[in-house]
Length: 594
Image 1: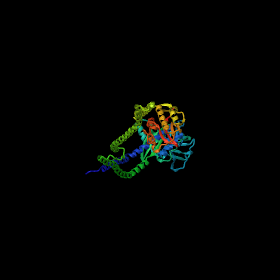
Image 2 (image 1 turned 30 degrees about the vertical axis):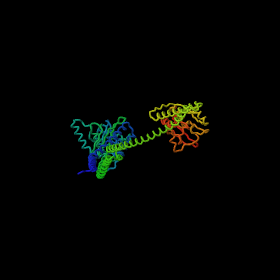
Image 3 (image 1 turned 120 degrees about the vertical axis):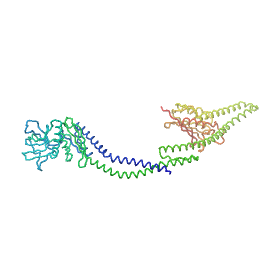
Image 4 (image 1 turned 90 degrees about the vertical axis):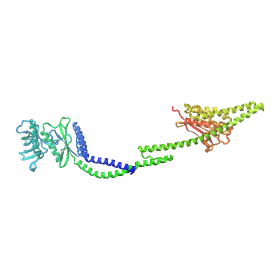
């Protein structure tokens, strides 16, 4: 059974898109959660590194800002602890042990102590000289109290959090040191002491107290105990995760050192519950996404299949028309892929065949026009040569018969004039053929155009005088870039044409003026105007503006045609137009950049 290309493409596209969707869904389900957590942890660690760098140079304002940013941007509880793991904003006692009054003093932090049995005993009542009993972990310079009693005040305090941690941790560390056969650096004991001083430790870095998050305080307490019980203070960064009440948390510890060489610790806790919630929400949302994507895949696959098949069907129809020699057919190009290139190639083939057929038609029409032009040219040349040849034949007959012998010199002069005219006609025809051949190489140079026009006026002064014509010249100095000899020839042709068609005792105006980056040269003659429909014909060969084509009006009829070719070789604008009381011929030349 024949299966159409549309359904083949639809099936393949649907299967491929469904496979991609399935891979994405499985990947999101299995790996998105870990990726999300790793990304969040990486962002927090970057913030912590920045915190450590700011702390090292003692930039207190930036440290406080970073601590707030951790809370606002990442939901992180963070604080700075001193070298013993105590909060940096806390009250502590400086004491002397009763059994060793001359020994070193011990610092006793009070931040975690609360009154026992619900008593409302204010720990700030402790003062210098107060006798106290401390039970807790003792280490060089530090006595971390689990319980503290002041018999004189009848009050006692206890750190419930530390008490719950101590037994297990102390036992674990004692076993470890016993296995290593090393004395532990701490002592779990009860001692009597005298309060030497009461102090409030305030942070210089703008950090705040740990707050009232119980879990965060528990982790700080564990870290503090673990720090005190260890053989050496922790120097490495620590990142761990743990789970409590079915919620995952990430715990960070970063050792710090300020510019005064004082050690401290940055501790931070972040809940990963928002990540779990976001992942569950995404998983639920993906059910709807998959359903919508499946429908969309089916629709897009069908549209895609039709879109690909449609140009193929159009190509098939077009090639059938080409086989029937209908070269006007074209394939619509709707894409830039291989199908689009194939459509373009077929269109190019069709256009080439159509163009060749059109070119053949144009060549035939061109040949017909050339034949017509050739006939008109031959007719024109024949007409131009017929009159001088007739005059020469008449003069020769008179001279041969000896009639009017006293006018012999007159007829020889007439013969000479006709020969000169024929020579001028042949020279103009050769010039015109040279300019129209397309092989002439134009050479240009800068020259003063007003000087050339002035020379042309002087050259034709005799002709002007013969018809008693007045010449009004307005020549603005300007240097142009052109072929001086050819431009002077154009000026001669324009002025000759004006002299020829200007009635006696009238005026001819010649203008040379700058217009921007070009120079205008215009010759205007007063008298008969040219009909508007014949203005374009004045540049044709042998055109004289009348139907009789009388040679007595002068010229070979090729001057303006030659001028047209010269100006087109220069690539400059030119033209002719009727004025209020005459006709003006003009052209432009490019000015020389000085």
